[in-house]
Length: 139
Image (cartoon, rainbow, N blue to C red; front, side, top):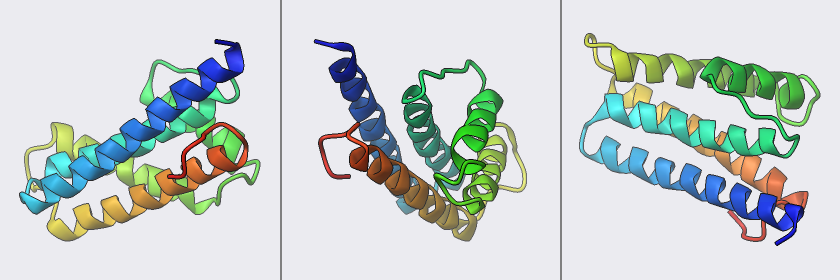
């Protein structure tokens, strides 16, 4: 398998994982497990962002590095809308509260908005990757 095919396979697996995380988010919301649902919504976006960064052969060990690089390479350059940066901040903040906070818990409304935001970002990234020949399947 050549490098391009190998990259394509890896990106497809990452995007599939992002969509599985979105499905888990919905399941957790249905179970009223809002803190963990918000965390899954964030991770869905995180996996998709990591896939985008791999298209530029970029990889980071910390969440802050991944987010900063995505902002630099894909938002500031106009590939994705600037509002994605604020959405990412929201998801990251709620993930922190969901994973590490104890009170007050996230509400159903906050978590459902996290799912909507995450779905929009993941769909946009998957479509961009597909249009640029990185994905075979339609998200």
